[in-house]
Image (cartoon, rainbow, N blue to C red; front, side, top):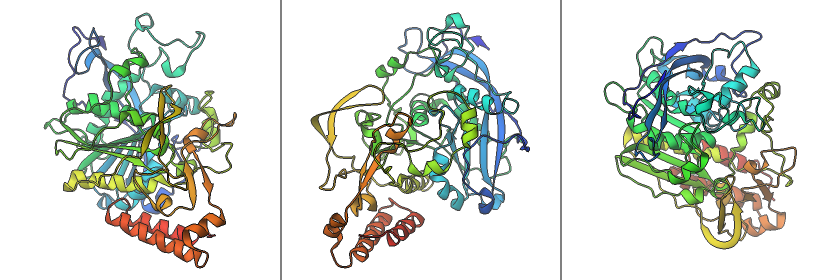
Length: 512
């Protein structure tokens, strides 16, 4: 590991990291991961591996004005982990691998898109790989199981006195997320090398006996922001030995069109000068945002037009009525004991609704997302263009929304007579409504995540009768849901399995 002379431009070769594992599961040591899924029932297995290699730390040149990232510090060593969910029977494998950048906003290492998309993965026979990409996650893992995770490291290669930002643990105001001990900027080469690994025939590759054909990357919320940055600034230079792209497509969920500094020593404000812009040529990219992201994460300010260009495909999807946080993920978390062990940050609590309003927003955004992931595969594999959707309807107003990042937005949603927002990716929940779906909730002091859940207000019997008639109210409601599902299936906004779930839910919903 050394400082690179002259800020060399980044290289295109993607090294294959060393693999250790699978890491044994014992009575006292197991992978830290989300629970709730009986993989055995679906013929799947879960294995944890450690991957080690060298990653460069990048910057924008001495004057911070380079057009592509430059190597600031070369060959910094790292060891991180991957979780591999795969069919036991290789003949059941679809050929598609999804690589998720784990999310660390809660202060602990968590898969969010896995529980969101797992129904599709398990029925299709995909492989899902979750990779730990931030050093703060490694620190929390080592608090949970110090012996198991002792080898993991994403240390900052620069001496402390050469780092202009961040603090050390014994300094006042220390923030582990900005610690001088660690380097967030190793993430970019780690992601490239993870994709290169799963495509390789190296015997150390856990998938070397599987016929891997396509590899996609995804991330949600903070990790979606990381994925935006990777796709914009690094992906086009990450190649296999044959010149092929490491990744075939990207889906950023609730990444809100934002980017993040590419190393630990760049101030967050620096990203204001580098908005999210994909290169002129890139693999297909989907930006999936929820209604809860439009103002709360200011995705409204980062909208981009769709493109069918075969060398620069892009889709922007905004899911009507959906909160920032997928509601189903509350059922897929590590144990509360492990969450508490992971650290003492304010965010180190179970992910649970605690808004002042009595009911969390229960719109299942994952039904639409599953169709979007399937459409990404069709786009890449079959050349079938995904459907287009209009954005959520927003108008200028005197109302001021302050985003999670401190931006003020003078705008408001356009809504129907029942309070649901117009436009966006539709679903029976907003086209055949029985509630008003709000993207935010009023925070209780002891709960830190209410904002991401949103809240809903169920319709009164009078409102339901107004919509679906005083006689045969339930039958009319179900009939309208069936018609909505049929249309959405035809337009590829739903997959058949999710369509059947929606109809079944309508049948068992008491109306009025």
